[in-house]
Length: 398
Ligand code: FEO
Image (cartoon, rainbow, N blue to C red; front, top):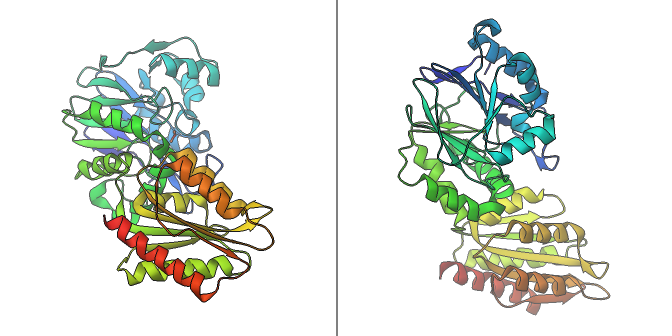
């Protein structure tokens, strides 16, 4: 994606693909990369909306300078929907290149501009509902705090009906030649859209719902997020998904996540999954927590109604990777799930006791039986695991 791409006649995408960063926010794997989307509106005045991570400045500035006639045209406004440095990394350099440029943001944005980059002059504070007229494009600001930081907002172009939505409606995965939803195979993005939502935005689902309410009645022709595809053919596709996920609406299916050192808990997990299958569940996702990054398990937990967690005991508690997963599930605040638990121990218990604590904290519906095994499961205990699978199948179809 070496050139700016027109979205409408005078709005261009000038974002970049990041194929080099291994971990987003130093923790979420990016096997398929990510894009940082920036947009330029050239009307009576020229406005840039969000920028890119500083690691990709060279590509970004090449596109920007190409559009603004070798740097001779001014950038009048830089509108910052979101200050996280994957989008604000170019701010200091832009301020040097275009010293007359006005940085536009809400009160919290401009505090962060000062704290991150030491910039205090040449700024314009806007409030919710304010309109900035570029002369040919009227931009309305919609404050959407905590989607994903306190300062996050959206900018709606009333003229072109493009919603510049910040992190909301974004996705992991680079743009491999196609920018728009009608240029790509959306199915190739679905998993990474949900992994992005569930791990980056999902914790703030109540705030996403508030943002969705704010968007009611707005005629949205194009959704232009800071990450992933631009939705111009079917903007409702992405709007609807974020709406469903932030209401914790799940699909029929079950995640079976297990930790096993010597095979006992794995054998139990296999029995649970068999019980699910015998009861007709076709969407079953088994994850070994020691070998699967939790972001993928969180993604599937957000997708499916049933979650079964099984852990061996390690040092009188949960196996460390399972402890990490449980903490992450708690932190993300996922709601309205059916939960099954099982586990094993050698010389003293601990895993199941800790999983029971999670049952209470999560307030999810516990599906019986809870199966706990010393050393290795016998036939009766494996039948109990099958029964747990069957009961879970019933619970998710209620
Ligand atoms: Fe893509 Fe919250 O930054």
